[in-house]
Image (cartoon, rainbow, N blue to C red; front, side, top):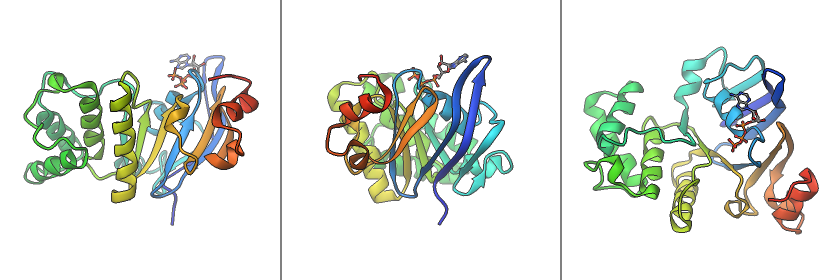
Length: 240
Ligand SMILES: Nc1ncnc2c1ncn2[C@@H]1O[C@H](COP(=O)(O)OP(=O)(O)OP(=O)(O)O)[C@@H](O)[C@H]1O
């Protein structure tokens, strides 16, 4: 079976700044892969390439087996994205936002009402569809964003620092929700973060530093029993 996401030797420059250097990583089907890196490591640049905000001129990116450069429509249709910044219109209701995104994905009006209820139930927001996004708490807004990302039944979710700005309880709710979606719905996730507490020993872990993948593997194998903070310091020379 093809992986949910395969990135092979992808580089990206901003003028003289080499933001990504021959990055390769794989997100297996039905897996949670944590992409750990400090600010400036290249996480957002990588997500911008996967979502085609930027063109990748070197290396290749495959989503659910579809080559992003040669089969962009098929590849992007398999991808759900939760951006670091808010992607919903705060003045519209949750339902209006989701209906808009459903129509962007070609879901008919007839099907979209039922699909909206379904994804809202999956993220624990049943009964909130008529609320304005601005009236939701920060954690509820993030869960509504996950519902938005799920609307077209993607194979893989990309989440870029999805818990930034949330309190501890809301953070763990968003993380638990993502893990539950993987277990129950078979979706995969690439979870970009700089917060070590969000990573479990059984997770697949990619350490990105200064635009390079230093390690990918099971978190417990990378840490070798010494704790993630120490392992990260040993690999990067940086304390987080
Ligand atoms: N539009 C841009 N123009 C120039 N340099 C950029 C641009 N975007 C990012 N960079 C640089 O590329 C490198 C990677 O940045 P990137 O935003 O991808 O890192 P990040 O891991 O997502 O960090 P953060 O969590 O702070 O967003 C950094 O050196 C950054 O300064």
